Length: 48
Image 1 (cartoon, rainbow, N blue to C red):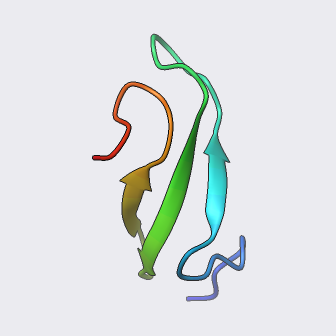
Image 2: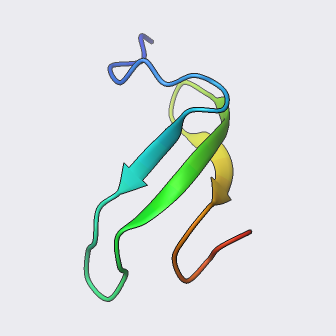
Image 3: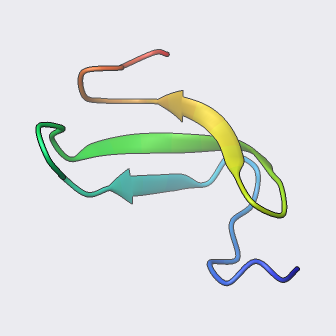
């Protein structure tokens, strides 16, 4: 499956605010066919 967002390791993306979660930055560690891994740089889950 092609990655429509062309995400790569170490990319930093903006997760837009939704429900009760504020907008925050997320650094990509790994990209899979149906998901990504990484951690929050800012926001309520910073460093997780």
